[in-house]
Picture 1 (cartoon, rainbow, N blue to C red):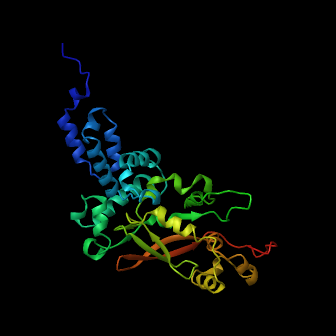
Picture 2: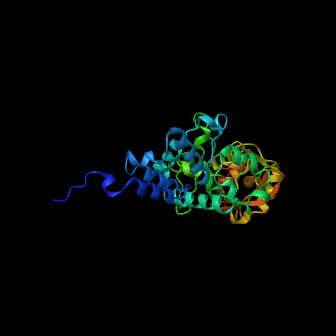
Picture 3: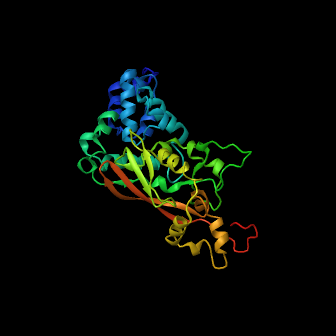
Length: 320
């Protein structure tokens, strides 16, 4: 009688499992996470000891286009990349939003592979950012702005006096397939793959955002690469700042304001309705952020908008 197979090693020798692991691109963290968990304790052992594992997951997350959040940049040595990788896949690996989940991870890995020189793909995160993007033209093959930035949106109104809304609960992922948005159920902070993604490829340590209702550029910085979260945080801080009338008029004229404020809308009521960037974004959404130029080590981008609702000319509330 043939001996009954009782162990995974009877079916898959360790050497074969090691070959499978090496065949998985390092930036494919979704497959690595599932492979790691597939045959414990054998497959975890293929990733080395604790120190080797951490180095692997750090590089893997880097190649998957995932960066550090503001609170993590002060002491990056304390960041546990294995936990980050597993959390991203557990909570977001199967997200079906067009700018999240597997599709976004695949796009990120592709850009990290195609936009950055080969000799920068397997180095430490610290060394990477000591070389790039101070000389982006030397180390990269062009610049791609993350399309996820075109899906960041915010609550229409700031919190009321008796309402508390932490800043991290302001931004949400706009759903282009839904006619009605539900911000509490679409919060960006619930999508770690999206908010950890680099905002550009190659990543930059400093970004300037133009094309907003504000006169000055919105500055964004992260010494380990500006992420989608960094961009939304910088914009969120400016949402409720007063915008001069001239600046608001200029951005309205460049964005087909008659598609939002049809004939019959009172000019005074219209301008009373638009005194902040938040007010402006209650009628428009950021459809895209486009590359402008690199100036030394700073990446300049600009916002492109599309209308999302129309004002009611018959409104009696003295505000649209």
